[in-house]
Image (cartoon, rainbow, N blue to C red; front, side, top):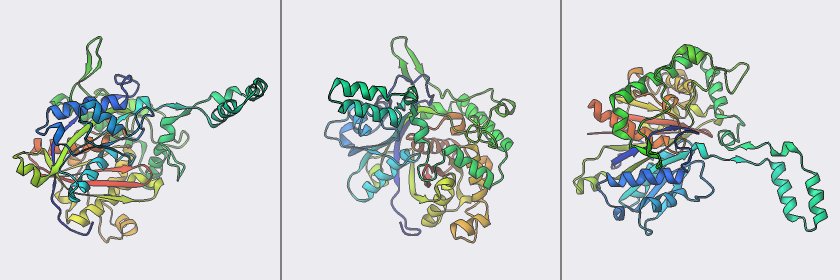
Amino acid sequence: MSSKKQKERIAIVTALRTPMARAGGKFLKMQADQLGAILLRELMMRSPVTFEEVDEVIIGNVAQPIHAANIARVIALRAGFPESTPALTVHRNCASGMESITTAASRIYAGEGSVYVCGGVESMSNIPLVYSEKMTALFGRLARSKSALDKVRTLLGFRPAFLKPVIGLMSGLTDPVSGLLMGNTAEVLAQDFGISRKEQDLFALHSHQKAARAKESGRFALESMDVVYDMYNGKYLDYDDGIREDQTVEKLAKLRPFFDRKNGTVTAGNSSQITDAAAGVIVMSESEARKRGLKPLGYMRDYAYAGLEPKRMGLGPVFATYKLFRQTGARMSEMEIVEINEAFAAQVIACERAFASDAFARTHLGSKKAVGAIDPEILNVNGGAVALGHPVGMTGTRLVLTLLHELRLRGKQRGLATLCIGGGQGVALLLEVE
């Protein structure tokens, strides 16, 4: 996209999410397609558009379940969309939930459709364990064995160690290019920017405190729905259950480093939580919304993606925001709320410092001046993924709807939603309300 080119805004008409449930907990028995269908069904019930008016359903998902290939199509049909409505699954790691929205925007700009249902879903509880390569190879040899003697010979090669599983979640959170777990990339940034363990733990504490206040005030209830997770006993979840109202720095300090056990500072307490959730939005062009007489929740003015070194992927928001501001002419000083996904406390702190650094801008962005310092009072005002969780395929959509709701509640007009992307990318969205 060319510099400062003004495109028609994309209207976000309706937005909704499920509560965010800790992995292995209340949503354990819900597969991602089931959770997504529950969300989209409720989204459409609250929507001013009908199922038949939707041109396409676009859903972000990272750990696509093997039983639901092209999970967007499965979700759409189970939610009640006509068989004639196409559906597309998009995957850009942590940005998948935003990718669904920007993909719809591209289709709208290209004249391919008018109304899209977008969103993201992730069931991190159900990311499977996988047999080791040696066990898989043994199964293959066993299947090819023709005689009983061949089968016996093959089985004699079995060793108990073959049964040690590969944890799918850990594999998915490992960058194949740098060979680093996502948490180790946060350790790299902590070293680069001299971020102490105490700073990270304080950031984590504040995330929980802000999220607890938002929960208590009813802010999260405005953007989420209740989800029945035990029909037989009538049990449902109506809050984000990862928030720890009683969190303290002392409790956080007791946790051991998880990724670099000897010298590290990144712990489970100052990292994003592993959770299950779904989120959805209905989008159309601003002119289409006006033609229908609708008052959207808000608008996407523009967006940008950027690439960077995989081992420092956590700085993706800085690169993407720099690109976005060049496209639009916007400035950080004009942002009234900023949402940066809290993949890790160290990662967000590193972004804050990089945003404010002229030296970083000169060295890494080719710019004489910093992108701009972020006022801490407007950053992640309701907490973030450290307190709420980071269901990777869903988070991008959540950031958008949370930011738009908060802008409206505060009587503000402009905000930035951005996140880092595993593999070395970043995305940034410029959002507005009226």
